[in-house]
Each structure stands twice: as C-alpha cells, then as structure tokens.
Image 1 (tube, rainbow, N blue to C red):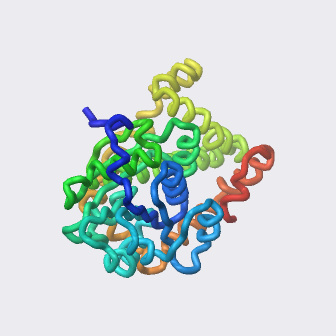
Image 2 (cartoon, rainbow, N blue to C red):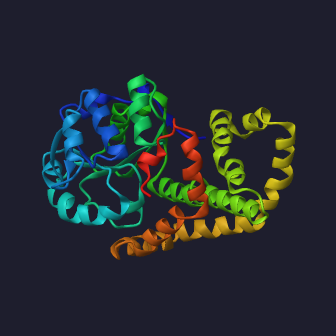
Length: 336
C-alpha cells in the first residue's frame, strides 16, 4: 500500500527562516509561488532576464530576481522550468550558486533521473509533484481543499530532506488532500508512460482514427467530430468522478455492452505490446535521448508534427463547430 502524508504529518516550521526560490512562473510556477507566499513563506521568483512572465509575477505581489540571483540567496530552490532547459539552466545559473545544505527541488524527475542534472553531494534533492495543472493547484488552495501530490527524496544530505519537502508540499496545499510517497524513477517513468500511451498519445490517436474511420465511410465530418471528440468530455468527467464503474453505470446499457464487446477489439494485445515497447524505451532512456536531441536541434520534427496536427481536417472541423459553443475559450488560447 502507498504511504500517504497529510497536514498532520508535516511540520511547516522546518522551513522557518528559510528562503525559497521558485524558478519559472508558468503553469506550476505561479501556483507554487503564490501558495507558498500565502502560507507565510519567504518566496522569490527566479526568471531569465527579459522573461515575459516578470510583469505577471510582480503584479501578483512577488519579488522577482534573475535566476542566478534567486538561487544564490535561497535555501530551497524549486525548478519549474521545461524539462529540456534544465541542463543549461542548471549548469549556468543553479550549480554555481548552490551551497551545502540547500535543497534542490523538482516537480518532475526527468532531468535528475536521466542525468541532465547531477547535483553535488552536499545538497538535498527532492520532489513535490502536484497531480494537477497549476491553475487547479492555485484554485484548490484558495478553496481550502488542496490538490493531491507526490513526494520523493533522491538525495538526503542534511538528514531532513523528506521533512523539508513535506513542509513545502504543505505550503502549496497538497498535504490537505494527501501526498503519496514515490521515487524519482517511479514518478518519471510512469508519468511519461501515462502521457504517451493513454492521456495524450493514446486518446489523441483514438480520436483521430475514429474520426477518420467515420469520415472515410461517408459520414459527415461534423457528426464524426461530435461522436469521437466532443462527447469525450462527458465520459471523462464520469470516469474522473467515480472510475470506470460509475461511467458504465451512468451511460446506457447499449453503450456499456458496446464497451465490453468492442473496446478490447480496438485496444487489443497488439496495443498492449506497443505499450510495453514504449515503456521499455522510457526505462532505458531512449525516449529521453531522442527528446533532448530534438530540443538541442531546435525542435524541427516537433514543430513539423505540431503544424501537421493543427491543420488536420479534425481540427478544422472542430474550429468551425466550436463557434456554436461561445462559452468555450479555446480559440483564444490555441494558436492557429
């Protein structure tokens, strides 16, 4: 059984008098910094010179410094930058300013697990990973309920790494909901696997193939869009609320019967074998090496694939149909 920590298991006082630097002010960064500050901690935000996020952070009432300066004056440094930037930022701005006794933190273990960041022996290396996007971490904190999170200790130089990490997790509200103990290895590999095979890659391909199958059989693209993409939210909301059983209870008997009969035909043993191959490539570092090389080369294939996906028939039909739903805001958020 998993070990889960709650507020009663944390001691915010272990971070008393310690300065915290949150590096980055994106989805997670803005939530961590604001929640920690509202919890009474001494917070500063570290950003690269000229960052567009600097004004946003200052407007939120936070003190903003260049990344290196923020690290230099902090005892606890949380790195919430894109995975592929960690190596460069660590080498240039973080490593030269670390001192023994510091705690270097991450919300995802990618760079530490795959070795693009190798901290010195004298610092604690820990993780607090909220299981939700930053806007949810912020909103649930303000509501007093919190978002569940993960905690991991990669390196305990001071003997207090876990206690300090849990205090940080309490400071952003995760301990209200519960913080599950894991490892950098487990968090990194399961997170990448879930994204690639189910949450992003798997669902995207099921939607695309379902849409193209119906359109290819002569059905209207608009009808195919609603059946294979739009209504997915209704199903996901039910699953999110009560698991697969609640979803199956809530849909029609016909839909439930089709679930049992046809689902395993589509996601079959071949799909499982491919999942196992994807997991193997995550575990042996193949995926990480490809992704880091793609980043080092300026993201040519990534940008090509993004452009190809955004100009597909599925997306074109969706943009037209979403005009029927003025309550949606996606057209303002996703570049065309």
